[in-house]
Image (tube, rainbow, N blue to C red; front, top):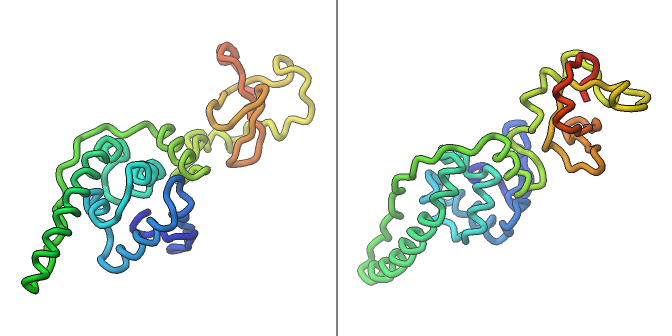
Length: 219
């Protein structure tokens, strides 16, 4: 959160805030500048305000958007990603003009005017949750706002036997029957992966396994 997070991991109201320096493509110099500007002139109100006040390149801004650090600005990530080129272009122009204006006003002992107001953002439909989570992991190495298995959490704890409880596995067809197959939640090798949220093994099966009724095991 660009309005709450710091250079390193921190604690905020009993919750751990991810370190801004831990975001891919965002270096310490930019984070120091961001935190200093926030402490001096207050929270960032919009993406335009943020880019006007902090010197960023395209890759830095994209990484911060993807990991969710700009969610506090009340615009969805798809909208911000679609708008960032224009926002950066305007911010660069505003800062160049402000520099010229500041030198002119200095000659007359006048204060520098405030930064330009935010311009209207386009209406872009937000990406699906699994895409947002994937972007977070791409930029930070972890899921932050949720986990791909959250939507089946109740099912996972409703009394079904998990792979960790299976003591002997002879063949999937004879011993393990499939109620649900979760895909895309772990890197897998030879059909077997590991669920980060619990450390339990995940077995990925072919789609035709879903055609058979099952009520015995959840793998």
